[in-house]
Amino acid sequence: MKHASKIYTALVMLFLFAPIAILVVFSFNEAKSLSVFSGFSFHWYRELLRDNETLISVRNTLLLAVSAALISTVMGTAAAVGMNSLRRKYLRAALDSVTNIPMINPDIITGISLMLMFVYVGRMFGMATSLNFGTLLIAHATFCLPYVILQVLPKLQQMDKALPEAAMDLGCTPLQAFLQVEVPEIMPGIITGMIMAFTMSLDDFVISYFTTGNGFQTLPIRIYNMTKKTVTPKMYALATIIFFVILTMLLVTNLRGDEDSRELKRRRRAARAAAKTEKKLKKEGNEK
View 1 (cartoon, rainbow, N blue to C red):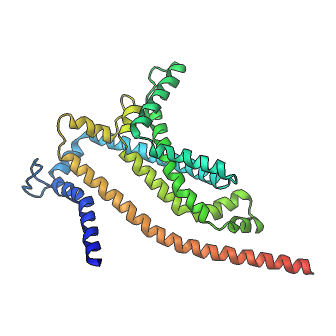
View 2: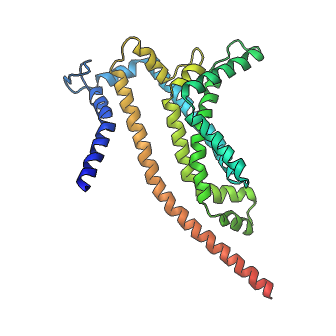
View 3: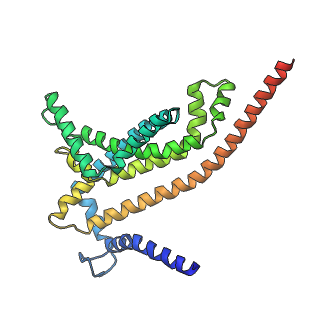
């Protein structure tokens, strides 16, 4: 049984990563062939650096992904804190359901509905062009928001409720208690949510296709336009670079996550010890 489970796991990993491995190998192919590896070369990486239109689309995609990730992380963290403070179960369940809708809803429906809303609002205010970078950023922040909430909310629920109270007993204001105690506790969830938002924004095509305007082209739209003719191995080289950048980010995040967990445990023990000391001092003062 153990051998069968190992074989099954190996087959699943092979199925998942074999296409990526083929893409990486053929990004170093000397020829343009998609089936015959004629020799190792950095030719397509050099060609990629000469393709200004593709490099501009990469810059646009990174700018959009970073902006959407930052906005959705701030808004998602605030929303998660608000949802966690709710006491009515029905209201909380309703908000949970509303949060899940953008993830369950098909991208094409989300993209068309956002496009119609942007066009309607643009015409209402008499704008010449309703779709631009701003509409694209709003759309990306909208569908990235639930991923941040679902990463931060469990961390808030796992956090010891006595920690912010102990911080306020020791003289912190509610804002200081949130920034110095709660935020470090939920930081792994915030970082994970921000990375997920960045990745989802970087990868999106359908919503971007419906909400972008003229003059701003993201990388997925650039690749889609290239498929009407042919996709050259320059795109393999670009995909390989993006893959290893994301892989490096994940490795660094996981390593930092282990260090943060140890630091959070140390802070938690110190906060609990301080709370116990404060209660003991108060008790002794009352007895006197």
